[in-house]
Amino acid sequence: MLGETPSHLVSYEAANVLIRQVTKNDLYPLWEMAYKEERPEWKKWDAPYYEHQAISWEDFQKQKDKYLYQDDFWAIETDGKLIGTVSYYWEHKPSNWLEMGIVLYDPKFWSGGYGTKALKLWINHLFQTLPLVRVGFTTWSGNRRMMKVGEKLGMQLEARLRKCRFYNGVYYDSIRMGLLREEWEKNKRQLDNTVIN
Image (tube, rainbow, N blue to C red):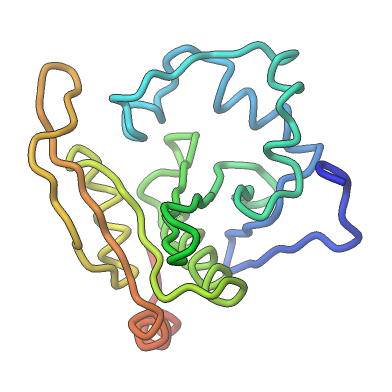
């Protein structure tokens, strides 16, 4: 049944970063970081052209089954602390076309290699558990850190849709980056021998 504790919690770890399914203990810190505030700092970088609304803890708990023990939404933690989430959604499931995402909520964990390590684990998990030929993400040209993460992981710039994201009076490009399974297998060997920071 949805939201019930599985007998085995799936997780992966590299250095000081762990990704795993979301548990009941994650719900309150997740709400505090993601939905307690109307204008959290992380939202300035994560698709800020889409409206973000704060919700009460009570209302968040009513949606808990969207987060608990799901295949498409996992927690990122370091040193036992929840710092973000990784996720995916189907752009077109019959084609196995999947897009993934990541949010690190606390700015003190930005630019420290945490996101790159978490996405590396997530990509590996997705390729191991799903019949994918490609994984990718969509971001915007204002989020240079996200584009840099894609480059570090060997992703290709697949599309740049010019001036179609409007934010704070400025038009930005929509950016699509992706990676094929065979590219990942080749890149992964190199990444395994590289220190990510």
